[in-house]
Image 1 (cartoon, rainbow, N blue to C red):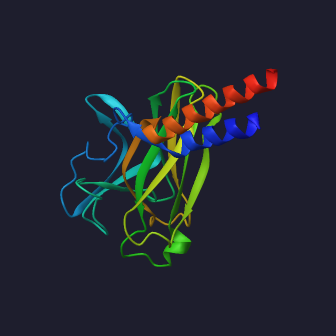
Image 2 (image 1 turned 120 degrees about the vertical axis):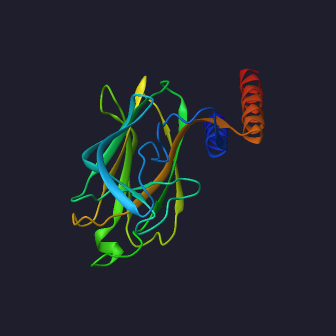
Image 3 (image 1 turned 90 degrees about the vertical axis):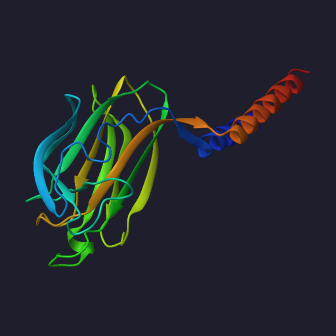
Length: 215
């Protein structure tokens, strides 16, 4: 009984978590590099006020109204397959044991692909502890062909150290055509008020059960 109550209240608190505070990701909308409308460019990294934001393995392809439009108020968006499948990463400060919400938007490439999006598009995302490389969020893959418009994705994870590294990687054919990415954010997650109340009720019931057991 005690285990059931504890498990139920924990699940309720996790399911009811929301995000709060400051976005821990720099240049989450990829607008730090000026790209003229109707053009695209490839850079090795981006920065905000002199602080490195995104780094890459095979370049960061920034597009402004080319084969698609940025999500929301952004000007630029990223295509993860530059001249070959690429990956982009960013490290950010975390608190061990704290839950975080990762959110981002993805879209299959709009036009120009020589083969089906299900073959050439797709990406994966994962979060690791920077010091140990242990997974905070095990790699999650998103196959191409399922995202005909900008689609928000949300994942929750618990940090295991004082710094975590977020990585997006291209999947599918390494052919310079790939999935689009925009508006990345990581916020600390906090339980919703209703979940807090449920958790408190569960803990109170657990305490009552313990007192009855002692009698």
